[in-house]
Image 1 (cartoon, one colour):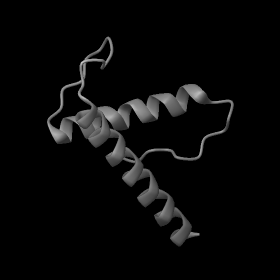
Image 2 (cartoon, rainbow, N blue to C red; image 1 turned 60 degrees about the horizontal axis):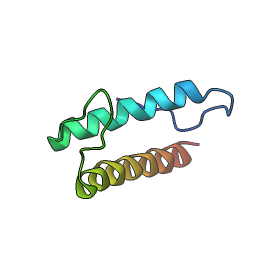
Image 3 (cartoon, rainbow, N blue to C red; image 1 turned 90 degrees about the vertical axis):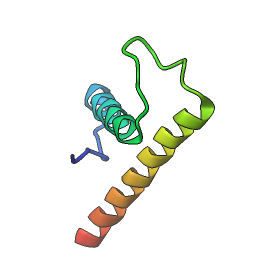
Amino acid sequence: MRYFYRWPRRNKSMRNQALESMKKEIAAELGISLKQDGNGSLTTSQSGKIGGEMVRRMIKAQEQQMRDN
């Protein structure tokens, strides 16, 4: 799935939806279940794994975009 990494500042809703989608996809790949009403039950380790992978993918996408331009 392709995510949008450069959003206009005015369009926070689109950005938040893309990040939530990415978070859910990564959590599913890692076998971590996310709840609809919040993720306060996640351990620090689980949150870190999800967030770390999100950052890795965003960096990779940005590097690819810079190579393509």
